[in-house]
Image (cartoon, rainbow, N blue to C red):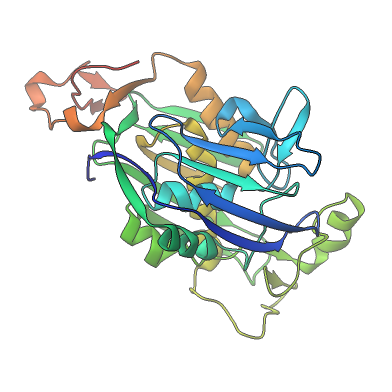
Length: 318
């Protein structure tokens, strides 16, 4: 894991597409933001009454089929996870995400278009050191058959996602990633959202998936893949789960020093885990990246935590 100064975008870049759930065409512009701003969504309205929300766990208002961010007035932006994954995955600390519709456009169902926009805008280093949330002890949540946990990890952020579908066309898959921009771009950025055709009528009835198509989703029936172009990765579904985790956990507000693991995960359990972590102040602390150092075992701060030696960071910043 490279510990460095904070970064932002050098200029702006715009993408245009439809919302997978709303079906509405949306223009989304990524742009620079000041030190310690994090990721800020700006919903631009025609009457000039723009609304702004910082992407944090407290801003989440729904997780049923996508991650929705809002405030006391209601939702501001839906389906935020893919653009958040691209920003966090590509090592961006501070950015504005301005859009003129209710939902981040789905593009091709992956984060590839947002990675391309980041490349177009360019990145620049800022004056302040990068800050991290260091997980100090294991935190776990379980919702029905879904399970997720975070545990201490000295080498950055590691994501392990295991899925197990009764649909034999998807079946059991497992994928792990040690997050850095190169690995994110190569291994998960192009992994698309997926679903089963049998669920479409249910989603439509609930007002979701109005913009879904074969151009922005991987679709299965009970026995096979229906997309004529095939899969981008043999385990594309598990890789997309990893992509979603990176986006959902970007709502910590800072990059994590932790290892994440889930079984049959999704937005709901990801958010529940992040909320559980944030609510337990003994489970994490904020550290400055430029002051991170490898501990000797004998001097590890806190000694044994959850059966592991906790890494030492000095000093705390919180």
